[in-house]
Amino acid sequence: MARTVLVTGGNRGIGLAIARAFAENGDNVAVTHRGSGAPDGLYGVQCDITDSASVDAAFKEIEEKFGPVEILVANAGITDDTLLLRMSEEQFERVVDTNLKGAWRVAKRASAKMLRGKFGRMIFISSVVGLYGNAGQTNYAASKAGLVGLARSITRELGSRNITANVVAPGFVETDMTAALPEDQQKAYLASIPARRFAAPEEIAGAVTWLAGDQSGYINGAVIPVDGGLGMGH
Ligand code: NDP
Image (cartoon, rainbow, N blue to C red; front, side, top):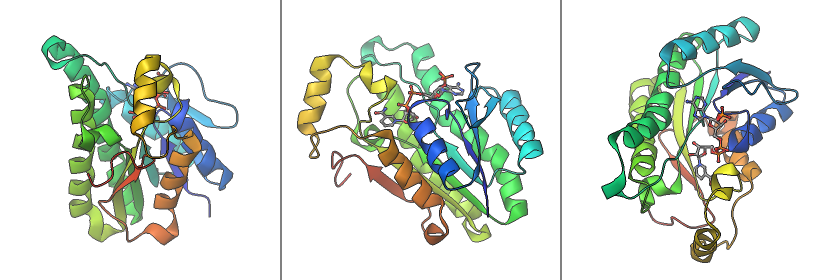
C-alpha cells in the first residue's frame, strides 16, 4: 500500500535521490522547496523549515493531498564553515536553527498524526562529522550530533507506539555541497576514505528506504553510517 512520505529538501541533492527512491516504490511523496518548484513527477510544497508556520502550512497541504505523513525524512540542511575563532553567533545559530531545530520542528509536527495512526518512521539525515568532528564545522557538526540525541529521545518517547526514529550518517556525497569544497580538500578527504570515493546520492537513499520498510520496524534509535568506512568505530 502506498505510504505518505515527506522529504525536506527533497527538491535537489541527496533529498531528491531519497524522494525518487520512495516514488519508485510506489509511495506518495512530497518534497519541500523554497521557491524552486518541485522536480518532475514529485509533489512539491513550499516550506522553510526555520519557520513553524511554514512547516504547519506544508503539512496541512500534504494532509489534504495524500493524508498524514507516515514517513518523515528530515534531510534539509546547510553549512556555513569557518574556524571557531572566526565564527559569528549568527553563523552558529543559523546552521543549528536549520539543521537541528528545523528537524525538530518537522518531527514535532509529524508526531501527533503518527501517534493517531499508530505508525511512523522518522529518519534524520545527519553526517559522519556529527560524531567524527571536523575543523571549521563547529556549528554544522554540533547540529548533526544533536540529531542523534533528538532521534534517541523520540525513540524513548514514542517507541512503544510503533514509531521509529533513526539517523543516517552519510560520509561525503557527490552533491552541490561537496562540489563547493576546494579541490585540495576534496583530495585530502578521498585519501582518508577507505572506499576512496564519494558516495552517490542513491547510496544514501538505499539506507533510508530500507529503514522505512516493514522489515526494519525493530530498528529504533540507531545511527546508520553510509560513509565508505570513514567514521568506523565512532
Ligand atoms: P544540498 O546543498 O544539495 O541541498 C540542501 C537542501 O536543503 C536543499 O533542498 C535546500 O533547499 C534545503 N534547505 C536548506 N535550508 C532549508 C530551509 N531553511 N528550509 C527548507 N529547506 C532547506 O545538500 P545535500 O543534498 O548535499 O545534503 C542533504 C543533507 O545531507 C543535508 O542535511 C546535509 O547536511 C547532509 N549531508 C550531506 C553530505 C554531502 O556530502 N553532501 C554528507 C553528509 C550529510 P533549497 O533548494 O531551497 O536551497
